[in-house]
Length: 215
Ligand code: G3P
Image (cartoon, rainbow, N blue to C red; front, top):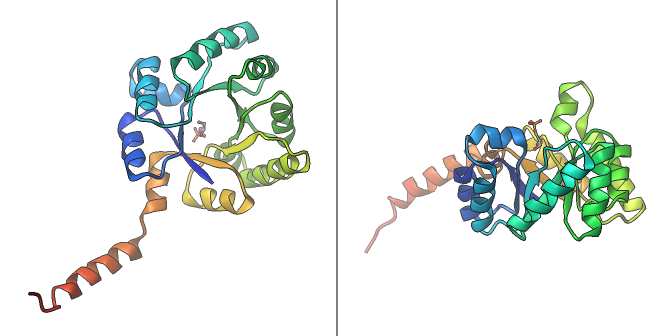
């Protein structure tokens, strides 16, 4: 399973990239706005770290605008994946961009039928937002199960990128289902690495090591 950071913070990306557990980065307009920096500048810096998959979202709402933005974004760096929203205009843009060889991440997916359509138009990734479904009282993880089943049934090559991840149990459940990728905030990825018993155990080993005769 690939692990992505859902952030536009270079500091956060660099930290996980240097540990060696990061496979990619997803950004969205909200995350970019939080950084208060120019979008392209941030994208270039992320790509320069060597991150092999960096999703950058279009903000146009009509197909022609999405195509222009998508074509521009993909020229920034070979690691860029263009994010298009799950709308009729977004599906049209995805189909055209995919035919041109651009890898498209269809975002804002909230139903299995939407995911089916995204796969049919050639999306490389589909991004179902599970946390936002949970927020509405619907079990987001059920959607992941359905999409994985549908893609397997028809051997769609589209990868399931679990988004709107809020805690480590989301990552665990997605991995058990066999989702391809989970994208998460830095705080969640940190929690995958850390465990209080690891820290307590290490402290005990170091303390006991002091009692071992040296020299
Ligand atoms: O990047 C899309 C998605 O992961 C956003 O998550 O927490 O704003 O629902 P959230």
